[in-house]
Length: 245
Image (cartoon, rainbow, N blue to C red; front, top):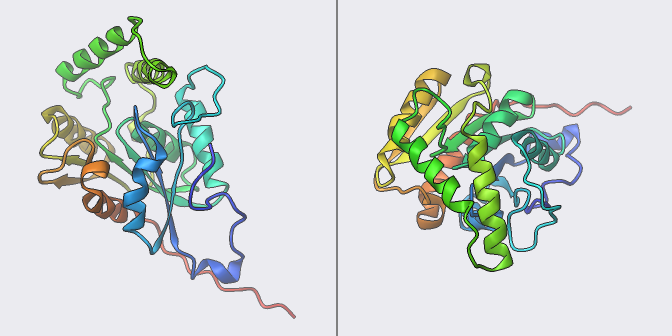
């Protein structure tokens, strides 16, 4: 699970931090990988953009064959942060990881953004979407031919979707600045559900005209603007170098 963009090297000293680029970590969703954010990262040269393959995902994962629970995914994200604060943006299912990490370590996750993260466990989330997710889980349980990667990713997707059928965290425990985003070209349940979540969690809402669920692949510039919106919510702290006698 190496992070791209050199995100796990030792942090800068006090005299360097005020000039360092603002950090943001991008967390991918189901049937995706960290490299899908590469076009987005190239549009944000003034930010230190980290992306990584979540456990079990990607072309060549170092994986033991056991799907991680949400705590395990949060552990992995915190290892990517390596003790250095950052904004975190989660796409789709990756938003669960971002939110749970923000609740566990608000000292490290200084701002959080989610793009079209489904929350079928919540009473305010559209019920018809929960039914769609359950049908998808049931289909994944049927053995079908495929490549080793396809078979692995079907199992991972079913396991991770199942985790969202029960409350994975309490939105009321969020304390860091937070933003939710959705597109008008996506399924309507995302707009309805995320507006309800924003009201519950006190989050800002960003609506992108013409954007779809896979906005980071189809409109990297649009998703880059969303990432910047989240990164700009990080507290600005100027650290002065200690005098050395």
